[in-house]
Image (cartoon, rainbow, N blue to C red; front, side):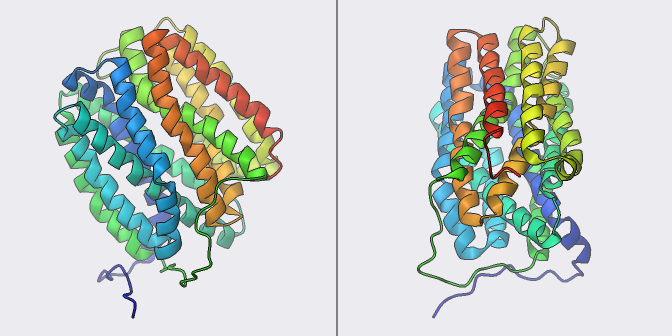
Length: 385
């Protein structure tokens, strides 16, 4: 006898929730992501960490993210993307205030590992929901869904800027964010149709990328390094190199996320008019120029502009790569995500080690080189259509 896992029904009509459920889940991930990223300078100062030590903390987040992809594939394949989104989302919201409660380095590293694992499981689940919705719609919608992620990152960064400017401690900021998001998370997951698959002992729930999936994974790998490093280190760069105030440090990431939002909202139209390969190739070339501007900036305005251009350029990478992988099933999606989000494991820590040894500008120059690598790789990605 087996026990059926289900989400209890809510006592109201859910038609409105069903329409906004998947976009909201992407938005939630963006809010949590930027809320943590924007307060990293405050957490660093609170625990008195140097760049190399902070890199180790971020490395733990990457280890948790990459190491949990087999778990993410298993949970999604066993319980369905709807239930997986709820379970992983609850752990993600719980981990947010725990990051601020960490009393020392080792505790922060442990909680950051949990945060990384929860975020990757949640990410795989909601992208599986998005890929299924795109197939049912019969038209490109993944860029729009990732645009809602950018709505979350942009609004979360702006709110964090205001909260930090008011001198609010990260703990109270994180507690409030988690408390406001937990009910909409539950309502969104409850409103979606039950997609729990039938049990199949022969079904392969996880596999490493192979063939054409490797090229997609390489592009996602570089994109994850760029996005993750900008999220985790742009505030440090603005504060330590540019000399911005605590209230202004999140503005670089806000500009990066804001331009990603704008481009993702029009990305599906660009994909329909041209092809995904051309959009990604040209966009990542533009991102290279943006990173060059950020590296050479001597003031806050050109630095923020450089990050904004870079955000616009890399906006199409994840939605188009995940859409291409999702067409081949959740196993292919998890496989590409494994290789792609390995960039989250490698990127921010390597950026920190480079910043510690060679300076923040050298680390940013590496991100520009990776944008150029994505432009070249996308030309050979046959499945990126």
